Every structure is written in C-alpha cells, then in structure tokens.
Image (tube, rainbow, N blue to C red; front, side, top):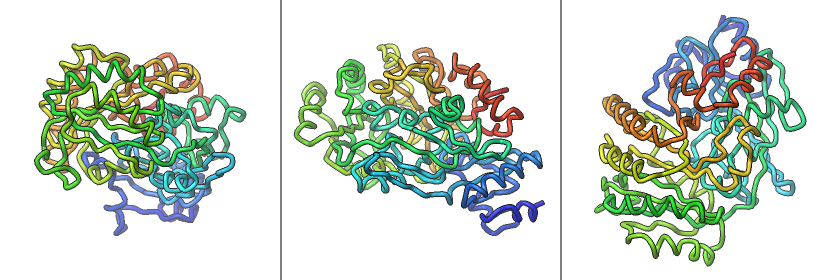
Length: 453
C-alpha cells in the first residue's frame, strides 16, 4: 500500500517505520498526540491531487496540515493520511497591483517577510508562526483587522483540490458558492493550494504592550469598552488578563506578576501616534510597563513568538463578545486570578471597524455585529499540567459564556462537537451544508469542525 502511494508522488511519504516519523508527526499543541498511518509531504499541486485520490480510494481519514498550528489537532489524525503542505512555501508579491499569492505551507512570518520590502501587508493574526491557510479558512483576525477587515475579507481567490481530485479556482466570479464557504468555513470543502490576497500599504507601525497592575484591571476594562468604539480604525488595542512572563525581555521585578495588558498597534506616523495614545496615557492609571514604540510591522507580528514555541500544552476555549458589562468583568477577574500557569491568558481581540461593514451573510464567518473575539487559553510546557489547564479554561469559559454571543471563532475552538459548530455558523449553516454536499458529498474532508451533510 505504501509503495502504491509513493508511486503517485514526488514528495516524501513517511510512515511509522521511518526514522523521521516521530518528529514529523509532532503538532504545535503538545497536548495532542496522534499517530497517522502516512504523512505525505507535498511539494506540488500534483502531489496534493495524488494524495487526495489515494485517501478517497482507500477510505483513510484525511487530515490537512498547513502551518500545523491548529489547537484542536486537526492537522493530524490517528491511523489516517496527513496531507502535509508545509513544503509548499512559495510567495509572489505584485507590488503594483497590491496583491500577494501565497502557498498553503506558509506561515504569517513567511508572508510578512515577502510583503514588507514592498511596504505592504495582509491582515492576519498576532503570532508569526501561525499558518496562513488555517488562519484564513477560519476567518483570520489580528492587528490590522479594525482597519482592513478579516483575512477572508482580503481574500481574492483560492485554488482548491476537491474530493474528486479536480483542481478549481474559487473567487467571486468562479464557483462563488465555494468562495463564500471557504471564507470562514474551515477545511470542509477541499485542500487549498494557493491563496491570492489583497495587500495594503503598511510598513512601520507604533505598537507594543502596556502592562497595568491587576488591581487596576477593572478600571482599565471599563475604560476600554467605552474607548474602543471611538478609537480610530488604524488603532487596534487588544486586551489581556495574564501574567508577566519570566523572560529577559521584561524587568525581573515584574516576572510572574498578574496584569491587565493592552497590546497596541497604530498604523500611522509617530506624531499621530502621540495623539492616538493620549487617552491611554491621560485617562488610565500609571502602567507598570509601557513598551510601545515605532517598529516594523513584521517585528510586531513576531513579538510573542519566543514565548510560544511549538510543543507547549494548550487548551483553549473561544467565544464572540458584543458587550462587556460589569458583571462579565467581575467573572473575568475572578477566573483570571486562578490561572494555572504563567503563560495562561484571556485575550479580547477587536473585530469591529471594517469587519462590521461586511454583511453577516456575505461570508461563512457571520459575526459582523460583534466587538471582540475572546480566547481563554491554558498554556504550559509541562505535560503534567494538562488537566489543570483544561479544567481552568473550561470553568472560566462556562462562567463567562452567558455574557457572549454564543458562537466562536473556529480557530479558538478545540474539538467541541456539532452543537458548537451549529452555534458558530448559525443561520449560515444550512448554506454551508449545501456547499458541502455539492463539493464533498461523501464528507471526505471531515477532520475539522465538520459541516455535516
């Protein structure tokens, strides 16, 4: 069987007898331990087509791996076939047209390094090791979201290998139903082998973290909920409840200290940044640390990379948030104080501004009238801490969930079952199921937040 698979491909096929198997099967989330039968390292679209056809013919479960960053472990599967796209890392920038074509093995860092020399950027997340493919298919939000929308709002077209092995292009003009579904519907519909994005003029930004003592957190959070709707869209501060990491980047006397953080990004010149930052500096208590400074956009994107290497234990829960009443703030502060590790956190990422100028039915990602995407993440390097991380995140989420919209950003969900999928897609679910039936009627691509046919 393995020989037959190898005969179809130019890329490597790795199985349990290969010396590279243990390393090749590792995922970003060290809490997930899966043992696939085969890992196919694709080097081209034809490799992807061959692997998809093989999986269909043999009945093996198929998992798609791009950057491998998926917290729920959907980049792998037990006793199945992993289509590993990580060798496919081509990026081509069109500086005049302000577009960029990105292959599915690229990380945000790969994309940023290619676009930055041209003074361009594509809205993406906040950790440069995040895979472009998974981030995009789930929606994609980060520092530029208030100004330029979600990553999917900047997607122009995608090349997709379907369950029957055909390669097609999905865009507003070609297969528009599939293009609609890809923008938030995850990996349910095929294997994307190329993304083409609209890029924007972004070069040097003003940003970084501001840390406040946890005793000031209630005041900061109340101020933040009032400030954000009035803030210029070029300014995107996200809020976190966490601890100061014990690393040399921060003063030793702050290590391990509980804080409320504002992590800022202003896409504009330094003289305008002073004006934008004035309310923060005049209306809030004196911070423990103000790390905001002019820096290249890729530097801000990779600021937290050293704190979050591959292999940590992760358990996260997400929700979409419209309002932040005092009752919710009380719940946040109560549960954040019980964080089981120094890296564990709660973040509120702004998804207002440009995001709200797209209709709820224009893409599969429907939360167009919300304010924040929330994540609660239990994180630690020690595998022995897995139960504590999981228990804390679940308890925290359960307590704050009544103050949320109900669904979540799929990239902040573990494998949580069909009820959470239904809550997340809401009125768009029926249309997603129609697209699924049209392009993947046998549910070949089911290792994901699955759309049932």
